[in-house]
Image (cartoon, rainbow, N blue to C red; front, side, top):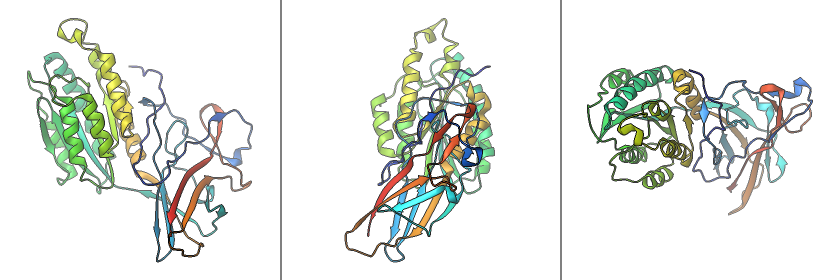
Length: 357
């Protein structure tokens, strides 16, 4: 099945107490020598949706060692991670003065992922279709995980069921998926299930996310969709949605399924992916599930960690401004990133933050 034209991607929004990571500059046509650019990945987007903001950088300061540490994710204008930057591409300024004792490393952080699967509803034909899709889509997830990752799996129909919890080994994931049974008839309380899992994620620390595989239909939840959005905002947990509504809509020509408002369903799923920072993947892309999980894990894991010793004298309550730029090591000018079709974009200031000494 062919994929529809991709739209802009959603991004992860961090709830961290520093300035928001700015987007890379808008694309423009330029003629720049190849040795002064780096190459963007030329890939077809597997993501739909629009972005509200980008992930924040995370700055910490140790007043004893005076070490400043900045962890940030760098993404291109299409919101793909740029994993090929080198230390010399980063220029760090404190109160306008460029720092020379800077080190840059790549951090691959472990992930805490909750997976919520649609497991039943009022419509038997839709249940059977969703059950087949879920099994095909979720099984490749295991191949993208590392031993230090932790995964919990939940399914929902009229109630939320825990198939695998975070403290169980990753090897139990296959067994958890095999335990997913689709009832002949039940409610599909999607909103209640999402709010319940987000509440579970509140006590989870580190690089965490919620992956939802769903058609988006809800039949009898106590929670409203606004309740779901509020819970997502409070949780600070990015939500990744694999949207099965496109496939499910093909079943709606006749019978009770024809009354479902699939346009509203898709709008809600996009809003859910955007509200706490995440991505939404189309049903067409779900046929390449391994690529989806590679994208999610790269999106969650990879951060550049910048450290330097502050030269500023200790001062009670003094505040220092820090900014990070991407530069061409040959010219000192903003780094240009060449993307699909040979178009180039300038990398402007990518992070601003401050700390108190």
